[in-house]
Image: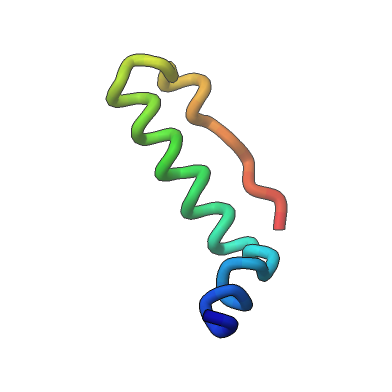
Length: 45
């Protein structure tokens, strides 16, 4: 229990944030909610 809680309460790394944003963009694009132009997001590390 406590181990899982520590895992889920840490701040995400920049790599994890980038992966989640790209995954969300892909879903939105496939569902027609995001145009190709809107997909162009610059990741600031």
